[in-house]
Image (cartoon, rainbow, N blue to C red; front, side, top):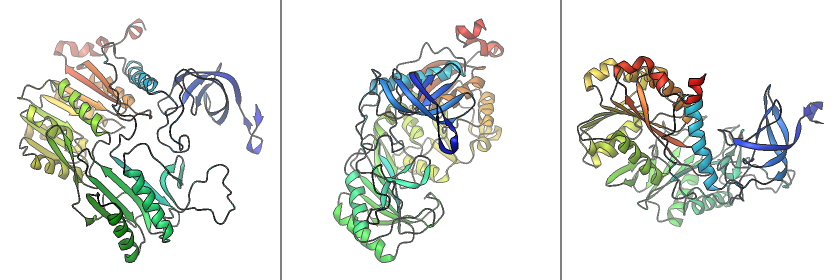
Length: 490
């Protein structure tokens, strides 16, 4: 133990064995009565650590000495690893990442929902673990994060940055040299826009003072080869807008859709902002099988397009469509799942909170000559009521793909009342999925489980679960049928 700031004791522990990895991506170690969540630790490591944040029964720690390297450990390939908030598992082999993501899913479903997960399928790996994203958003800032060793008193130091937020520091931006998440020409576009703005003294945004010309840069690519670039300005002059946009158009003639936005609000969201087309249409296209999706600057589309197709195929196959089904697609977004499965069913009813996404969903049906879809915007817990089911019919299958927070309790209750024959639950958070399954399992068997890795080098994992309605005589004992042996012994 040593003294820290203000004579507060800083705990140090030696020879800590890292035995697991937590949901947020930190390694887990244990002392006699203290759990440690250790930055950049990999299961199998043996480390000396210093605790920088202490709670009653656990602490957050950093490695001060790596005594023994885990067999799962590898060298990170990105120079920004550890400072940038993304790709937190680059120091772990991809095979190990898949192993621990699979474990995260099974642990959540057994520990929280008390389910038998013996029939869980092996996780579906991403075909590419680099350059797999089709969308990235960068932030301009006049407060660049200074790396260790840089002279913070040097008046000539370049402080304008274009990159990602430092975790926990909303006002600091890490200037990115090369990002391995999005394929060419993404890095080239970002760097040349940054350098042009620096050269011609176009000011970068000051998030505290709410001043500056340049605010955000959004780059979207697609498997069709189309390319969208959106420059978000704040307090730019007309000459500054014309100068930068003209430069980007000339330097990157391959850009299909070149757009800009003037956003002077106190937040970065663009959903309520007007989009101005500088060159080309206000959209690009993505293909999935024979389905074409129109992607606008505000559209939601899965950022790993290859894995999205696999995810939707799993959802479709789990449902086992015969062509006669009425399907509710909850949290439909831009209608990607709804339009993807439309030809396999009688009708799809999609519901989504964001009105713009619903308009995109309707457009995507129209451009594909799909006529058996209907889409509705509104809060799910309000839209999905008894009158809605009475008007549209009781669904044979419900597909639900909620945000990380899972479904609202009222929505879960509504699913219990509707009693669809099958529910396909797609989740990006196995813990909240397990919470919802605790309720649903009293009427439903969980019959198939399939994890999918959408985001290599992160702790995030998607999981698809098929629930099939029990017979009525099983409902009262439902919670006891799916339990593991350990719970029965309790």
